[in-house]
Structures are given as structure tokens and as C-alpha cells.
Figure 1: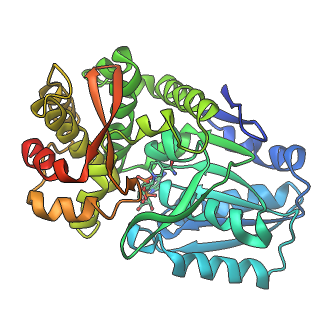
Figure 2: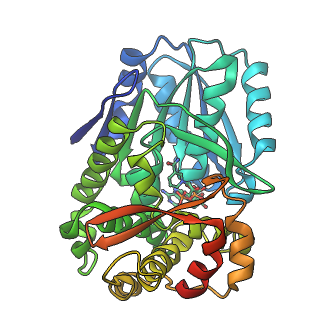
Length: 350
Ligand SMILES: NC(=O)c1ccc[n+]([C@@H]2O[C@H](COP(=O)([O-])OP(=O)(O)OC[C@H]3O[C@@H](n4cnc5c(N)ncnc54)[C@H](O)[C@@H]3O)[C@@H](O)[C@H]2O)c1
């Protein structure tokens, strides 16, 4: 078992990583919170696999557990789901000292964390990530939220969990396609911070999965410590995301988050080099690592359509968008692209 502590936030917390560590949940609830009731939130797929097992675990720990299950998929990461969960929490009389447990991928974690941030003005929550993507990225760092009709993650809050319990056994039931989404985010960490990590994705890395999760979480923890509220360095983690979010939106969410990020990374690297912002074009190297991992490298949307979606991104300011571009593999920089140059950037990136 490995532990990475996320510090520099109001209440530092541990991310516990390893096989079978979900059995620690009851003792963590008892030691970290004063909860009597737990609202376990999950999606229908995860519920079938692990819902009852985790509910029983919580009840065996002496807590009353109510389970809320919503349909899987990005289209349910919205305010309707949030509203249903908040009403369910109120009907079941959760108090301010009670707890939410998020059991699932990034969607469950983002929705459940957001509900925790606003139910009774904030109750504790614990993340139990079940996808590779949520294990290495979304369960850590306290970004919670849902999509609005206008775009991704437009309603949300920074709200840190009390703990992240990352049981690697959960990953055994992931389909290759969903596992792949996490691979895209892990490649992202390599491009931004760590050439050695990036090079692992040129090989069969699965035997090394726990150490990769630990490395990605450690990198994220360092960034969150310096910039919890995404005002500076944390924006580096958006590598591939600003274009990726536009791709997700344009595909009506048929292209998953991870795959959209995979394409977004290639496009950001290519556009940055073609626009002369960086000396070397790493898009081919990133594309070849994507391809080795069966991730896509391009999408069929015009520059006009992507521009329109990008201009609705929450990371846009009045005078442009900040994009993350690799100067080398393992070292990315933030570049402000003016609204006027954005079309040219996207056109050169396609
Ligand atoms: N908060 C953040 O910092 C952050 C960071 C990155 C991504 N995200 C968000 O995360 C979301 C994507 O997360 P995701 O890729 O985990 O997708 P997801 O939550 O939709 O999960 C993918 C699919 O896998 C299923 N699933 C989950 N665990 C499983 C398991 N163990 N076995 C079998 N099936 C399982 C789910 O039911 C779902 O159908 C996006 O909405 C994205 O915006 C958030």
C-alpha cells in the first residue's frame, strides 16, 4: 500500500493506493469524520459490480448507508442529477456531520463532490475511484462540478475530499476502451512533467500500474499544493483539455473525455509549434504514443466548429484563452492565445 498526502490545502488528506485498500473505508470514516450516516453515490454500471459490496462494508462498520445510483454517462453529469441527489440526501435526513462516498469514475466523483460541497453548505466526502482516469486524476485535487448546456464543468466548486481510497482491484473490470481513457490522462502527466513517465507508455506498462498511479497522484499533489484554485501552475494540467473539451462538446459527448484529451494534446503541440510558440514539434511523438495505446490522434471537426466550442470554455478570459504547449516532453508552458489568433491556431493544429 502507498500513501500520497495532498498538503497545502485547508485540511490535508491522504490518497491510499493499493490492492484491497477499499476494506479500510469503515475505519477511515470513523477516524476522519463524525458521520453516523453515509450517502453512497455511484452509477448503474459500478453499482452492479461493487455497489452492494461497498454498502455492506459501510454498514458492517456500524454506519447507516443510503445508496443513490444514477445512469452512467457524461449526459448525466448535470444539474438534474445533482438536484435529485440533494433531494435524496435531504429526504434521508443527512446532517452536516454525515458523509458522502463517491464510488465510481470521474463522473461520479465530480457529481458527488459537487453535491458534498453544497449540501447543507458543505459536508465531508471520500473518493473511491474505480476507473484508471479517476484513480490518477479526477479523484484528487478537489475540482468538482457538472456540465451545463453551454459546455463542460461550467458549474462547480473547489472542494477537497477527506480521503481518496484507490483500490487497484476495482480496475480489473474496466473494459480496454475505458481503461484507455485513463491512459490518455497518464500520458498527459508524462508530457507535462516527466519524460520517464511518458516513455513508460511506449511499453506494456500495466504490470507497473500502482507505481504509475502513485507517480501521477504525487505530481498532482505537488501542483495542488502550489495552486489549489487554478490561478497559475495548476493550469498546466489542462494540457490537451481546452481543445479536448471542445471536441467532447462537438461530438455530443460521443467522444469520451480521455479520448478527446488524447486528440487535444496532439493538436496543442502541433498548433504551438506551427505558430512558432515553441521550437520543437512534439505532436508526432505524442501521436505515436497515443496510437500505441489505441488512442485517437485526430477528430473530424472544422476549425470553425471547434473555435465556437472553445470560445464557450470557462478558461476563456475577455482577451483570449491560455493553452498549454510542450517545449519538451516533461516540460510544458502556458501561452495566452488572443481571441483573434485562436482560429489560426486551431487551423494550424488540425
Ligand atoms: N475533477 C477533475 O479534476 C477531473 C479531471 C479529469 C477528468 N474529469 C472528469 O472525469 C470524467 C471522466 O471520468 P471517467 O473516464 O472515469 O469516466 P466515467 O466516470 O464515465 O466512467 C467510465 C465508464 O466506466 C464505468 N466504470 C467505472 N468504473 C468501472 C469499473 N471498475 N469496472 C467497469 N466499469 C466501470 C462507468 O460506469 C462508465 O460507464 C469527465 O466528466 C471529466 O470531465 C475530472
